[in-house]
Amino acid sequence: MTDLHLSDPGTAAAGGASRPSGKPTTEGAGSGAAVEVAALEVAALEVAALEVDVLVIGGGPAGSTAAAFLARKGRSVLLLEKDRHPRFHIGESLLPMNLPILERLGVLDQVHAIGTYKAGADFPRADRADDGSDYNTFRFERALNPVFPHAYQVHRAELDHLLFEHARSSGVDAREGVKVERIEFGVDGRPARVHARTADGGALEVAPRYVVDASGRDTFLGNRFKLKRKNDKHQSAAIFSHFDGVARRPGEDSGNITVQRFDHGWMWLIPLPRGMMSIGAVCFPSYLKQRRGENEGFLMQTLLGEPQVAERMQGATRVAPVHVTGNYAYGCTRMAGPGWVMAGDAYAFVDPIFSSGVYLAMDSAEQAADVVDGALRDPAREAALQAAMARRSTRGLRWFQWFIYRFNTPVMKHLFNNPRNTWQVEQAVISMLAGDVFDNPAVLKRLRVFRLIYALTSLQLAPRAFRGWLRRRRAATHGFSGDTLQQGNP
Image 1 (tube, rainbow, N blue to C red):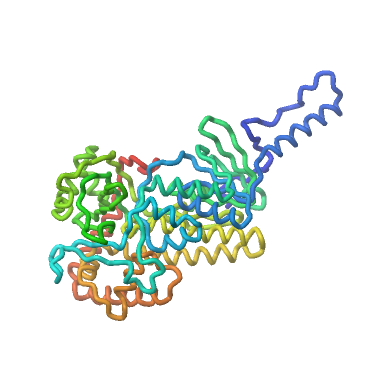
Image 2: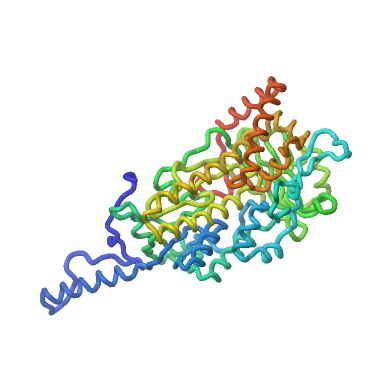
């Protein structure tokens, strides 16, 4: 960590105060009195730093989850969120593997109350299936040993607010409108002082024993340690909005997410509570460049260009602004270090094809809470605990990434349009769609079989497979501009 400035933890003052320069003004006092006054002032400044076991940066699903679990373990936790809840956020579709975490947190019933029941995911096809439908539905109840056979769609502003308030009710000192600006590290390489600022300009100094970076795509520590790396295998950008009056699937599938491939990427249709539908397109950046600043018209042109989407949007009304954001896939070269650990998008961000974002955030947050608590109890185990967490996280991310990189290839289209459950491989793919890619050996073994099937199918479709691979490689080289959500994107 030699690229960071290491400083004396006592060099910064809380509340915007600064150490006196030169001798303090003590009119009529002798030198002994001056020294005593200076010592008292320095001591007061040292005490002014808020001492906590753990500082969590970011009050999204990752930060609120980590904070709540740590507070339950008896830790004093300060949670700082730069914005104020409720605030808009994309990523409204949860996975079944979210639900055990929500249950352990004690908020599953509350999420049920604000969510739309999601039985599975459907993938439209160009032709008709044997039953006459023009899409295939993968229901979570068919996963291998499903813990929960469903998930929920949610308004993220409501979910994030719920989780933040739950952390507060769990004993967390949860503060909104406070932005962490910098961290000072001691000579031992561990966080010594953290400096933050409130929305009204007030200064806050924190002396944590441990830091959890759950800052999302701000990647607070990733940027400061220069650990963040762009994923050169996959880049995309999204344009989206919310609509009323969009047709849903019939019956128990009415809350399912639709993932619609098209020539320039893929589209999502996510049924939300109160009759709303989140609809957007994740595109190759080269395609999105064609909008030339006209976001509303470009979104509608893109969506209505797909007959199946256009049919469901007859009579629909847009009820929210159109947003554009770069889904810049990235990862950090390290997940943890002495006295700190990352969780969620602060460590890595992948294309949201499979709605994995909230699950990956909450899963890594729960893991981070265990690592932090274990390291504080037994410092000698810190490195081993961090390494185990990083290995597990990398393993799961790589499975999502393998499918994401190939999702729009002719081979993957063929396999999704013609599912076969030989050796329970289709069920394993459904388990992947449910988020079960970390700790289930039965799923991982069958996903390896699916990779072999993919390779054999690629040989059968060699010319089309090569064209798909070449297009994907070219798309990863294009840039994007005009982000309306994430500051700092090009």
